[in-house]
Image (tube, rainbow, N blue to C red; front, side, top):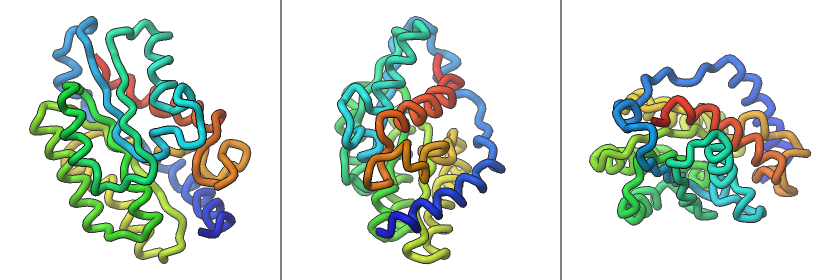
Length: 220
C-alpha cells in the first residue's frame, strides 16, 4: 500500500465528511426503558483499530471510553473489547455468538476495514455485516455501526461501493451510524503510528472522544 496515496485519500475524505451529518436515529427503546442504575454492557466488535494495535491494552479506544464513563459516574456501564487484529467482516457473526453469553445490551460494530484493504468482495462484506446485525437484533442487542474508508488503490468504483455499504446498512436497519471511525485522526502523521494506518496513543484518545460523544445519546 502506498502510504502517500493513503494519506492523500483520507485528507480528501475528511473534507467530504465535514459536509456529512451523523445519521439521525432516535435513541433506542432499550436505552429508554433501562433504568439508569441497571448494569449495561457494551461490546466493541472490531479489528486492530478496536484492539489497539501497537498500544498498551489501557490505551485502546474502548478502554479509554470506559475511563470516560467512570469519570462521568456511569459506573453501571461495562465495556468488552472484542477487537482482534486482522479480522474481517466474515468473523463478525461467529465472534458475536461467542460474546452473546456475556449478555451485551449494545454492540458497536467496527468491522470492514480489512475487507477493503484486502480488496475482498463488497457484496460479501455487506452480507457478513448484515448477518451480524441480524443476530444482534434477534438477541435484543442494540447496534451502533461505524463507517470505514479505504485508500483508492483498487479504483474509484470499488472505494465508493465500499464506503456506501455502511450508510446503506444503517438506513436498512434504522441504526445509528458514526460515519468514519478515524475522523479527525486519519491522514495526520503526528496522530498515527509509522504505518500511517493505526492511530498512536494521542490519536486513539481523539478516536475515544469521538466515539464517546456519539455513544452518550444511546446510553440509559
